[in-house]
Structure formats: structure tokens, C-alpha cells
Image (cartoon, rainbow, N blue to C red):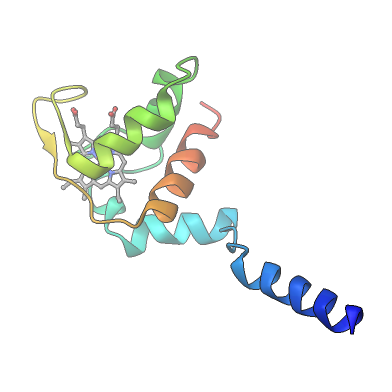
Length: 106
Ligand code: HEC
């Protein structure tokens, strides 16, 4: 009897566990979600290159929070005389993308 409860417990834990997105999956998301229409890894397009974003927020301990807000609400005049419209992302995706960007080597 105990064994059955134990197995049920393990099973329910596994189900709740969120799947972590891999490096390649996040990379593909930038394209799927349209980010690459305005951002390149290294070149200026409409928005700043991802490596420059990593560079600028390198020593900012609030970086994840700030960038999360920019994606959720949009951002104006920090980089260019223009705005990034708010991005329609789920929370998990947004966070994975932000960590991915911040981990880039300049
Ligand atoms: C329509 C063009 C456009 C699209 C689409 C777009 N961006 Fe941006 N992005 C910009 C512009 C322009 C800026 C600079 C905003 C500013 O100067 O405040 C920016 C800034 C940023 C920043 C820095 C924000 C900050 O607070 O410093 C991040 C991170 C970012 N974009 C990520 C993304 C991601 C991830 C996506 C896709 C989900 C995306 N962007 C889609 C145009 C875009």
C-alpha cells in the first residue's frame, strides 16, 4: 500500500515540474515570436543588438526585472528615439528569453 502511495506521489511531482527550455529552443523562439524582425544578435536593426543589451545590463542586479517589464509593457527612448511595442509572451517564455540574452558574451 505504501508503495502505491509513494509511486503516486512521484508521478504527481513529475507532472507539475515545468519543462526547462533549452538554449536552441529559446533561440528559435526569437524568430517565432517576431523579435528577429527588429533585433539581430550583433547588428542594429529597429532595436538594439542582443549583445549590446547583455553588455549594458551586465552589472545590473535588477536586469531581469527591468527587461521583463520592457517586454510586458513596451519600452521607449532608452536605446533609440523610438519604442518597442509591448510583447505578447507568456511569463515563462519571456523569462527564458531574457536570461538567454543576458548570458550572451559581448
Ligand atoms: C517592432 C520592433 C520590435 C520588436 C518586434 C521587438 N523589439 Fe525589442 N526593442 C525594440 C526597440 C526599438 C527597442 C529599444 C527601446 C528603447 O529605446 O527603449 C527594443 C528593446 C529591447 C530590449 C531592451 C529593453 C530595455 O529595457 O533596455 C530587449 C531585452 C528587447 N527589446 C527584447 C525583445 C524581444 C525578446 C522581442 C521578441 C519577443 C522583441 N524585443 C521584439 C524593437 C522591437
